[in-house]
Image 1 (cartoon, rainbow, N blue to C red):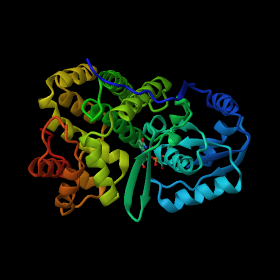
Image 2 (image 1 turned 90 degrees about the vertical axis):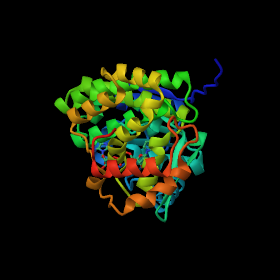
Image 3 (image 1 turned 135 degrees about the vertical axis):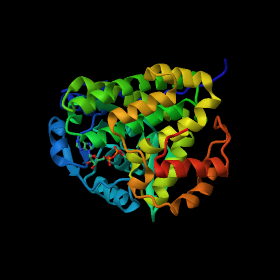
Amino acid sequence: MHFTHEWLPQRVRFATGGAAEAVAQEVRRLGATRVMAIASDATRAEPVLAGIPVEVLHTDVVMHVPLENAERARAVAAEHDADALAAVGGGSTTGLAKAVALTTGLPIVAVPTTYAGSEATDVWGLTDTGRKQTGVDRRVLPRAVVYDASLMLGLPVPTSVASGLNALAHCVDSMWAPRSDPIDRTLAVEGIRALSTGLPRVVEDPMELAGREQTLYGAYLAAVAFASAGSGLHHKICHVLGGMFDLPHAETHAVVLPYVLALNAPAVPDLDRRMAAALGADSALAGLLALRDELGAPTALRDLGLRADDVPEAVQPILDAAPPNNPTPVTPANVEALLRAAWEGTEPR
Ligand code: NAD
């Protein structure tokens, strides 16, 4: 056995119902006295921020972090002489805090309110004139993450489902992504189990804490696995589609995932068996399709705003981005077939 696994240094707290206290402790540990809080929704964030010295609450959050938003937030941090960032929100909020940390080095305490998982990665993303750029930098990794499932109770069911399937996609891609190792795969399989147990409960009763906790736990494992394994074919496809056609992030992942699984799983039967076992099904694809039906997840890219004419345009950028070690060799024909099927929402095979 030969592999090198690098753990990212981060404190992680699960504190259902106790975010404010946990955040206050984490901010004290950092010795911070002038916190810039970033949140997409002030009303949701304020109770979480109650115990910390907030110098300014910044709510100018936009998905995919347009460069001008990042620059405005950096200026606010400088103007208020902030010495730490507290991000309360989904991936877009964490993403804006990361953009500030990238240039200032300010430490982040992240309180996620979706299942996106950005809080557990050292990946940043910025959009400049319609092109999304990503990079890896240790400065953007939040120093501490506080997970409080009670903050998720108001996340609408369709957003919860798409976001949870985005997390599931982190797990699936981590099984075969370029740096995937046995530790990533172990985390990913446990993530699949937790997400596929938690998400149906969220749909059945969005106000039940236990389902929210399972899903959040799965989303964290998914992100840790993904941060280590890197982007596999699925994420490359979604990144290209999201960047070129401004598709909604989590929903695009939810639609595309079964098609990538259908392409790759037959080439890696041992991994397929492990994912299938975690999903409680005969094959990973059967398990994912059953879960998708149970959750009422989106099934076609055409419903997300992609036009049929857009499909051929995306093929070459996907081929350029595809990882060379993808289990099934990626060709113009199979990428185009995958995109067409995902556009129409036909049965993934
Ligand atoms: P988001 O943060 O934009 O949130 C989606 C919507 O849900 C927003 O309208 C938000 O206000 C609302 N919302 C969030 N939490 C809520 C709650 N608890 N109750 C009610 N409403 C709530 O979307 P997202 O899917 O979390 O994040 C997507 C972004 O994150 C994308 O830009 C993506 O690229 C990025 N991302 C980055 C990484 C990384 O590692 N860098 C990983 C995953 C996602």
